[in-house]
Length: 88
Image (cartoon, rainbow, N blue to C red):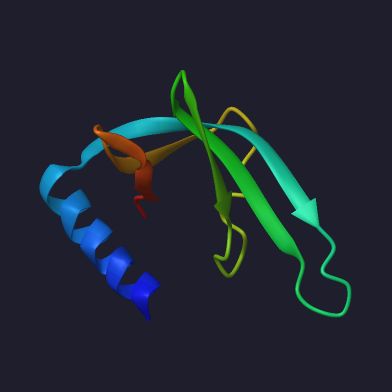
């Protein structure tokens, strides 16, 4: 429950103070889930000193299926780039 409230606070902060930029997909990872669902990860970069590992839970793995080097739109907080979201 605490994580839900934290996410709401982060989202509101992103709406007020966030900056939109282009990020480049720089890598991907796939993990066999065995008896459960597989995990698909995309690594994207929007600052030279910072890479984000994103768990792609979209129904058709939209971002995982993009080739490396593709660009996506990201909203992030300049003061804390760890707070970010992919803009759909």
